[in-house]
Amino acid sequence: MKKTTLVLAAVALYTTAASALPVVTYILQTPLYKPSTVQAAGLNVEMHGTPPGMDAEAALAGLRGPAWVGGAPLKLLPADVKPGRGTRLVLIFNGASAPGETVCAEPDALGGGSAAAGSSLRVLAVYCSADRMLARGALSSAPVAGPGSEDYRSAMQSLLAAMFQPQNNNISPFGGGI
View 1 (cartoon, helix red, strand yellow):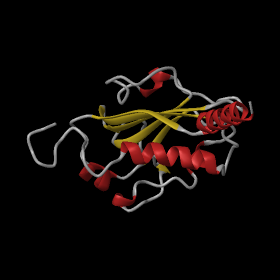
View 2 (tube, one colour):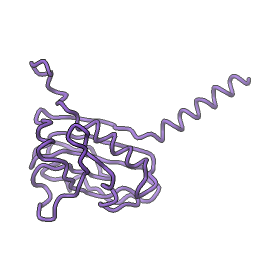
View 3 (tube, helix red, strand yellow):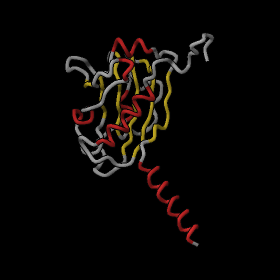
View 4 (cartoon, helix red, strand yellow):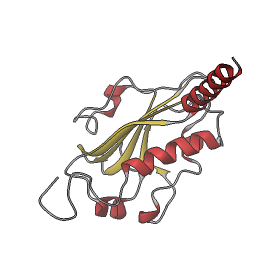
């Protein structure tokens, strides 16, 4: 009886801990993804929606690009750049669905909005060059505490690390494609 109780307690603890961890639900790099593009263009961010309890500035505070491109901080698109132009990372918080091929030309089509406090974190991330998608990914996580939350930063950094790898997953380093 004691052994069964211990096993059930361990399973409950594991399930509770696992459900709180962020989950990068998918990553896709198109054949157009090139690490040299990330190095040259950086990570300017076009945002649609915001995480629970945060504005755009708070959502990007403390987030950095991958170390292999210098680990520069993410920053909002400059005011003189129109959304939908140039090479940029489009972050869609609380969007409606998974992004399709046209998301870089029409990011508003996926919606995005401010989530209610205490709701789970859902993010679609798409790396675009003009109207072309280079890479995309999605993240879901338990609710985050708000601005400055280490859980939020950790979840977002795991998404960025999975999306922005130093080589395209579709191209073999040995030549010949996949």
